[in-house]
Length: 131
Image 1: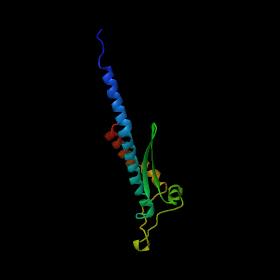
Image 2 (image 1 turned 45 degrees about the vertical axis):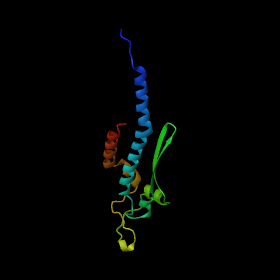
Image 3 (image 1 turned 180 degrees about the vertical axis):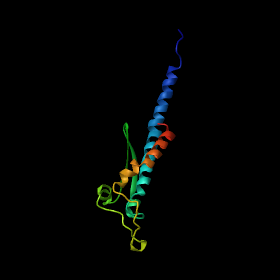
Image 4 (image 1 turned 90 degrees about the vertical axis):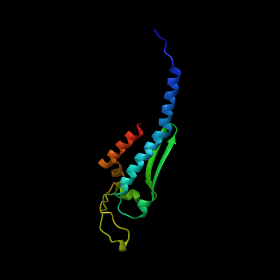
């Protein structure tokens, strides 16, 4: 039998790879996913040019062993628009105020993450970050 050598070096290299993934790649991947969903949800918001679209916030936090990310809006009516099925897009001219987005849908934030286009983009990000 031949003695195995280099195990200590392999362990150190593995620790370095896992640290790289946990410290850099995972938060970057979470941020990429949030950016994809947030961008796609903006296309479905009720108003094309409004406080809602401009108040979007993306945040990624590392809490111990967990990486937590969220997309939120800094407006009081965002939750109503996300969960209500009562509103429908209606044409409005720019002279009457902000332009209505005729592609707007209830649950715009969720659909921004769950649409087939978003899922394809997220899969592509996963391949890029190799997590």
